[in-house]
Length: 157
Image (cartoon, rainbow, N blue to C red):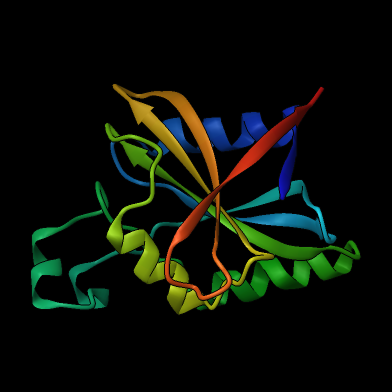
């Protein structure tokens, strides 16, 4: 599956990730899905609402917004309404990895499984090193939902 991003979308993700550094950013991807591609037309930036109270395990108390994010379901609903008003859909989400590679963590997999994102839902990860955006990667879950599969990104200019 190819993930199509416009320059505008790519820049908006970079800007959001750099502005929230050293914390993780989070947002939703608005666009269209067909059988062979996901065309992302816009983003819906959200606040990272991670607190210890939303943690899933006792060890989550050791973490902060620097290495965790929480997307409030109400933000998802707002994004969904905004997308539908434009005859689009929420096609995925993005978040940043401050000072870490743009590869999914075990926590990312747990979160993706909780969203129920199937093979038609994309997860973008933007690496940010020393406050500057670096690598952007795209992932979907395999059909069993047990692991991430890397996807190609095509930037339309």
